[in-house]
Image 1: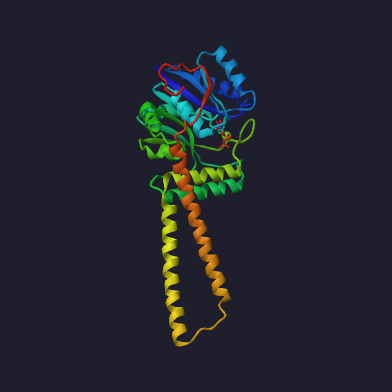
Image 2: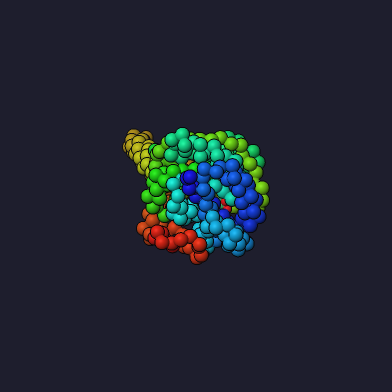
Length: 316
Ligand code: UDP
Ligand code: MG
């Protein structure tokens, strides 16, 4: 008998929880060799998610929940769930049934084969706005070029992990967490299981275009320093070109004389160099902001209520 903790981040999921519970129970009944415990992480939901979790926990003793004092984001919820887990296998899954629980048996089989992690990979993006798919794909290309980690396109957070893998993820204690990158960074053997994108059954996606853009910047700045290098290289190129132009202007002034009109070139160079300086400051700023946030050393989340036994937990 192996114990499996099911970690479920939830933010305003009152409409999904019941279906999620029913669907997962159906699957778990077919797996008598495993004992499943839910760890729901209520990420500061504003709806009935917490009362529902409390009610569910009262009739199923295998339901644990950790409830945050406010919305800390999915990354924080994942971190809290993994920290609260104690069993030898941990399954991370979304509450909205976009991660099909029917894949869990296959994932567990993958672990039995000897893999440390068995994760889902979306092969189609049906039902997702075209523009969002386009930017996602570009983001993967960009981050893989710029960093020393290799993100798999379509890889989702849906996965079953063994204890060694989970402990490795937890060892990375950075505050601004980019799980997709952390999962890749730690190494280990991952088996990919492909599945077709499923549209959300209830409720709506919590991601706005702006929050995805922010997520992309977080991803790049946490795993790559190439943008800093980029600022240096652009600066060097512009300086070299300006220097050559300066010599040209000097030589011309000495031998041909000065021709007064120079408005276009002056305006052009002020704007061009000004633009590059501001861009470089922005890039620097992104990294300084990260250092600033990390150095404050604040906890990733604050727990307000939980029914998780806290004897062996230091965080809550
Ligand atoms: N989620 C969370 N905190 C947040 C946003 C989302 O815990 O601030 C949870 C959400 O309840 C769901 C999962 O993360 O279980 C994925 O969220 P969503 O479905 O909105 O994202 P998408 O599937 O569109 O990527
Ligand atoms: Mg979803």
